[in-house]
Amino acid sequence: MTDLDPDHDPAAETALTQQWRAVLASHAVTSCAIDRELGDAFGIGVSEFELLERLWEFEQEEHQSGSRAQVLSGSVHLSQSAFSRLVARMEKSGLVQRSLCENDRRGIFVALTDEGRERYRKARPVHRRILAETLPPQG
Amino acid sequence: MTDLDPDHDPAAETALTQQWRAVLASHAVTSCAIDRELGDAFGIGVSEFELLERLWEFEQEEHQSGSRAQVLSGSVHLSQSAFSRLVARMEKSGLVQRSLCENDRRGIFVALTDEGRERYRKARPVHRRILAETLPPQG
DNA sequence: TTGCATCCCATGCATATGCATGTAGCGTAC
DNA sequence: GTACGCTACATGCATATGCATGGGATGCAA
Image 1 (cartoon, each protein chain N blue to C red):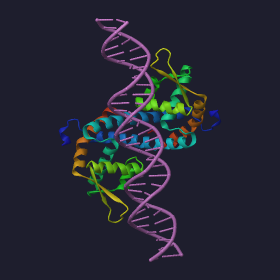
Image 2: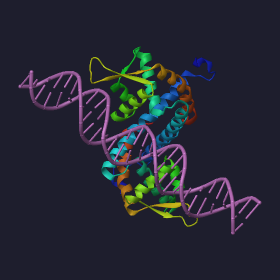
Image 3: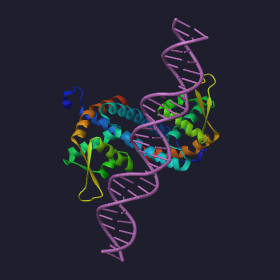
Image 4: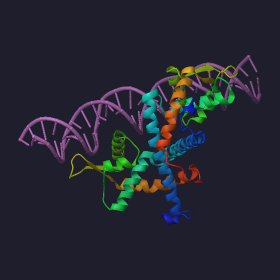
């Protein structure tokens, strides 16, 4: 049946499937550990940490206080609506601040608050430790 | 500050972070594509497909009609409750059948229905094509 | 200017998930 | 046999997510 497909290559198919299962396993184990530990200790999850990290990185690189939401949205893997709610949650808990963009009043800027920077600074080593503990050694 | 940590190794930290971001990106892109395409064509998502595949594999290996829920639960990366609901959904849509385990009446067996086998047979090549299109080439 | 398509973000809604808990069956110690 | 703890699965609840849509801002064409 599958032999009718001229491109069918059982070995390649198996390799792909194993690669995919490794991604699923890594993602499940690591994100679960991050959600649990960072959630308990700092009240943030994987998405919150990723956004804090992007904001912190942009701050370092560009020496400016905020980033366009649209740009940030591309760097965390969320739908536009989920990203909008993520920023709203983090603003509510005091980690970031939204402000209108002057040039284009459709857009908004998102900036770290001092509390957000501090939370990131504390969470980062925990995050890195979890990665070291849960990610498979690179072969 | 981080220099106080004797194990601090910036290069290793960067490598770990990049590895984790690659996992996040692969997972997001591929699972999104699977959910969309298999959802549109066959009414199933990533979790449903993974469970169909495990059941199909166990059938091939063990030549028996069902598997203990607990065993299956370990092979899809879901909490016990999410797994329970996944099986319930799939039974409701006719892909699997639950039956009580005779030896231990706490446990349940989960078995593919003919419809479940057929759905898996049709979905599998689409699934594999998506993996080939979205997973990064192994370096 | 006006009209219209497009862009950026917010929100209603349905759903999948995890945590905590409930329920029933099993096994062991006494 | 009884009581107690443990196991296997189901369910109430809160929440994060995606899709579809809404609403305001922008830009362009006529």
